[in-house]
Length: 206
Image (spheres, rainbow, N blue to C red):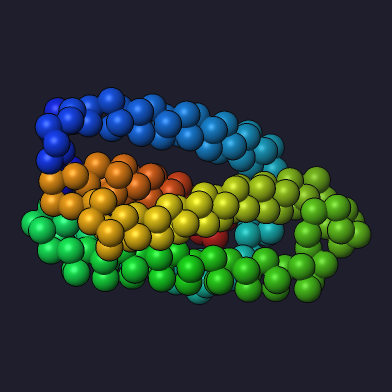
């Protein structure tokens, strides 16, 4: 559980502003991804059958594994915050490391997914893709754009968690001063939630 916004760190500093700042940042991210989801909805309404046919190219098994990896990573980061709040530094470090590992697994799988499509000649502006209909071209264009931007957010999240792991090891993050880790957890949960929407849109479309 995330403590109330008015909670203070060991030095008595009020961290309300930092937490509100993170929520404002996440709101701007929500607007950004919301625009892409809206664009997807418009084009899907125009080309329903083409989107359905294109979705058959997606690897459902790999997509499902990636979904499991991110959901598990959300659990790990939440448990790491709970551990540091209890003063269990060692457990928090392990859980942060496991979160990073899940993120890396996600990116590696995404790399193989993209490589598989590229090997088939399905990539932006490729002759194969340009030879398809408008609906298929839009589907894969949105796929690369939305999953690519999401993957970038996952990479950024991994790097930030790595920094948090270092801060925890150096006792910059403690049981009385963990707002940085908490805000990082909020960001990571947001990234996971975005994937929960991307997964059915591209892999389970009917």
